[in-house]
Image (cartoon, rainbow, N blue to C red):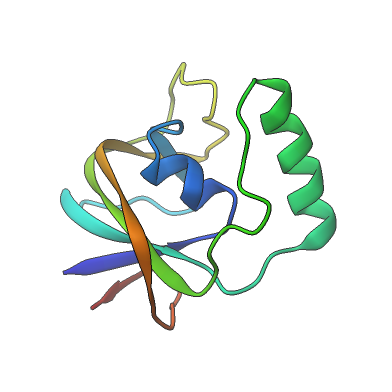
Length: 117
């Protein structure tokens, strides 16, 4: 199955159903279920800024979200270049549905773009 690496806290938000679009600089024709892989690295300043922004919306993130692991799965239903979704910042957005968060993340080395697991 395909997988896609996504930085935290976005990976956590996606698999827990709070974020239904994934922003990318590239488009895809792929549609279907993918594993959500949480990247191994977090930019500390960016992460804190993102965490503060997310907390303002009323969500509480885990203090240490899993890194370097497959944290769940989701279905990519479309790829768009415009959206009214508040999480969209483009230039492309993968529309996501049916998120599943894994209770026990699976350690795995990520890659850029889609990769096979």
